Length: 152
Image 1 (spheres, rainbow, N blue to C red):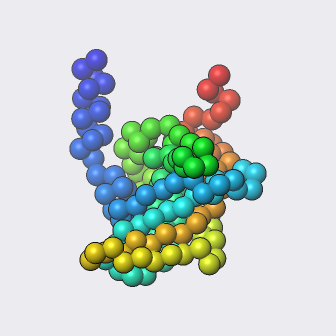
Image 2 (cartoon, rainbow, N blue to C red):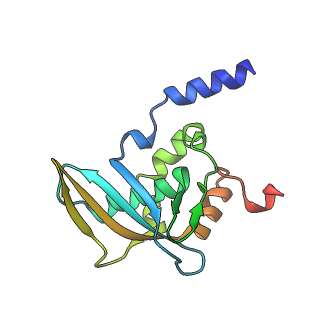
Image 3 (cartoon, one colour):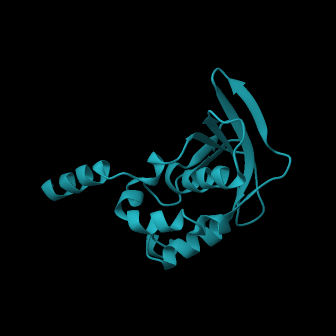
């Protein structure tokens, strides 16, 4: 029990990628092609423009560690990594992963970007397709998340 509490405190003290990401929200956007998620990612920022890479990082991070829902579509998806603790436990891996590898798993849909001024900030929303099956396969092969075969 003490060891588990110590590990939890240690992980909470470690800086994670989420500390470097802008404030974002993620929600389901309907049904994507087989093996993908379709999500809307909204980022609050002081800049009126964001690159697709910044939106994509938020989308991948949200799918992995936050999960998403959409009440209107009755859509709910748990985090692919299972828990936000996985990020702290595999910090070195995810630091490398979010430098460039994450770009292989998303595509921002052209024409989906909406920019709304909200006080002193901008809310930038884009629809993103995330290749969930390939992402799960590659992360389970790397030993970062459990494969579906090990869950039963």
